[in-house]
Length: 276
Image (cartoon, rainbow, N blue to C red):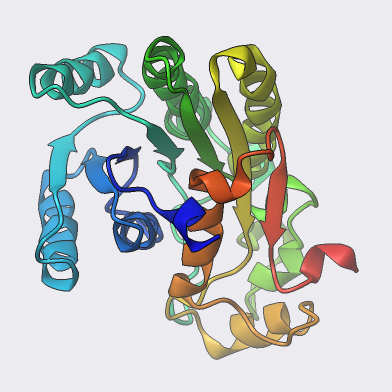
């Protein structure tokens, strides 16, 4: 059974690799002997992530390319560079997103309520989180469908793909109701949309051996304030948020032959919050 998790000879491309869980996704596949292609729009953060991974996996083959997932030309450019090196992408992890985070005691940063949420922000966030996943799947999924061995597409969704955000989590004392910070509408729309994309792709190239599933993480400890953590953990049966590394095994399962008969599914890992 252990051999079914082995990914030697496989290449995984990860979008948003310099983000919160991008490092963990890459590390999980490197643990299974895959080679990884890190992509992100931020060259500096991308290089930092690559160097950090090389420190943990000094013998691994790790490539890094700046790529805007909302731009077809940028995606095709990376594909061309890989083809020139005779590298086929066998695994695609659609992880890129613009996600306002709760930090310290500040609450959610750079977000606004539905009544005032700008069309510009809607377009930008949808372009990265949802359109980007579509474009990358279109390019690299099509490549997988033609290589004779198939491949895997993994869309990183969220527990907010299966239930609405509880806006009480983000409330700040002393603010009027119409000024309270909220999780933006785009986040729920994007993460739910990714499930629709997952189901579509799962059937579209199935006869060519391309599987597609989604992983929906719950809240992850990233230095949030004590009050936010207290509120959120009170909603989670396990009584805590996740550590970043706790999603590694799920990614390994979904990207390897260990899940060979799983297709079109959404794996929710939220400590049980979604069952209440």
